[in-house]
Image (cartoon, rainbow, N blue to C red; front, side, top):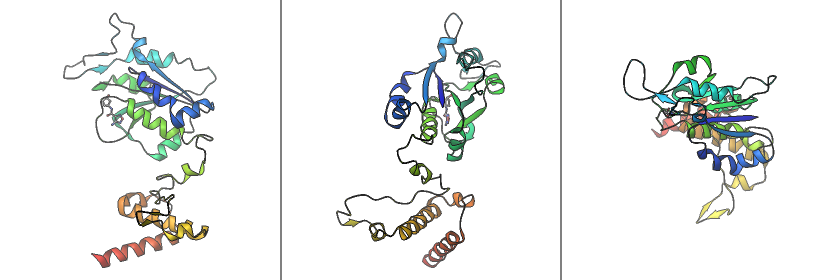
Length: 249
Ligand code: 4FV
């Protein structure tokens, strides 16, 4: 997979693209990661990439020409699939694990990171394929959202995570929140690890983990249960949780 980021602060991506999982994925050749300063594609006297809005009003608007030139300069091989061009903004589609799984199938992703009140609409209409938001809050720029999305997509690529299974059982990948994890020591300050996890009985361990994931999801994110794939056993366990909860209240 090829990923390019259009930004005014390419230096923000240097450490992120070299460290940890992303760095190893690059070294293994599983992904290529590039950060391009789209100011280099501003061909006006002062190299400006933003301008005042037509119609007046506060804030500056990202100009279309530097962005179009930067994307067109990515020199994608003619036979390569056209890239997904992703604009980061609060008005975008709310980013989820399902979207991460969808994007992980793409050959080429291009992220546009702005720092402005707005983006010239012609960028949205004629260049962008996806507008994404990482949450209902306003950041100073699209760089951190781009890093979050790139991180969540690259970890799903085959060969990136040492144990690919862990991506499958992550929170949200199963449609549920993740079950609790424990590691050595078995007794830490008197707080002990659940017996079942030390029993060596894999069937019981799997059942306990599923029940814990259901309970945690039921308590913290019941909305996820509406779309999760639940078995008859899952539903029986949830009904038990409900009845116990009703007796307590
Ligand atoms: C954002 C978000 C976000 C708004 C102004 C960048 C900033 C500036 N992007 N999810 N929340 N973007 O706040 O994706 O253009």
